[in-house]
Each structure stands twice: as structure tokens, then as C-alpha cells.
Length: 249
Image (cartoon, rainbow, N blue to C red; front, side, top):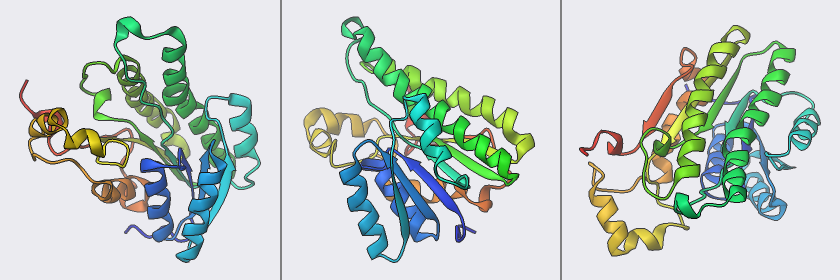
């Protein structure tokens, strides 16, 4: 059901974290992946790793917040990707009273405008090719329920959830599915030290499963939304959070 042989998948924000993990996952399931980000050196290392495991990957230098660059880069791919994993994003943490206009714009331009620009460019290619496609927007549980000190990030991810529904409605007629994957707190190299601290452990205790998610916890949900296994799923918001969203206030 999760076989992606013969498919091409574009993954943005693939230089590190979840994007890197998703690109390797899709390659293992047979997709030819196009890995996109601004850090080309990190992409080249990932490309070599995927090739060393028998997969296929191409590097695409891309700033998702630059509309001209997005249209040029995706137009230069030749055939449109069958799958888009819209993963590029910034955290933008900080108190709202201290948040600068530039800081707000940086987060919204990447997380929301950038996701729209890439989705639009890819969907245009899918429509022109007359072939079905799947777009998976990587949102967050903070787009569904808010926390402190994340006003720009939460607003951008809430916007991305609603954008997902709007695009799913418009593009269903073109056989393009659009869904949102909303991870909860996932352990990564960047946050591991925080979650080992007293404050991090207190946060973990608020998660009903009493544990952080791992990147592999996102594998099956992502593959479901990206592959034909989810062929009748569009406009959905899938939270993978250990029950965090249903925890008591």
C-alpha cells in the first residue's frame, strides 16, 4: 500500500530534522526524491546517503519565500513531482510583546506564504500533466491549540491548516489531494537537551502517553497521506501527538 515506485517526491526543508527524515523515508519506499532547502552542502550529504542505500535523489537549492525562485526552480524540474512534502519552516519563538515586525514576517513568509507558493507551483505542474498528485503540508498541533511564546509560529501553522482545506476543496477536481500532518512534540537533536531538563520533563508529563514522539512515529501517517493508501483522503488534518490535543486544560 505504501509502495512509491515510479513516483517523484519533492521535500522542502530537507537539509535537517523532519524534512531530512521524510526524504530518506520516501526514498526507502521507492520514490525518486527531490530534496530542497537553502543549505546545499547538507542536501548533498543527504543525496549521497540516499544513493548509498540504493535510492535516487536530486538536490534543489530553494528559498521557499521567494516566489520567482520557487517558480523557476520547480519549472526547471521538467516533469512535475507526484508528491509534495511541504516541510520548510521556522520556529520563531519569543514573547509577542518583544517580537519584531521582521521576525513576524520571517516566520509567516516561510511557514505560510512559502508553503502556498510551493504548493501552487507544484499543483500547476500536476494539472498541466493531467496526473493525480498528493500534497502534504507539515503543520503542527500548535496550529490547533496554542502555547506561550509562539504567536507567529502558531498563527502560521493555523493558517496552514486552513490553507490545506481551501486548496483541497479547489484542487480535488484536478485529482490533487491536499492534507495536513500535525506533529506533536517530536524528539530531535535540537530539542533533546531541553527535554532532558526539569522544564522539558514537566512538559512531557502533560502528554497523555507520557513520552515524546519519535520521527519514526510519523512514518506511517506521512506515507498514508502521500501514497495511494490514502487515495480518498483530502482536506484532512492528522494529528500525531500522543494524545496531547485531548489532554485536559
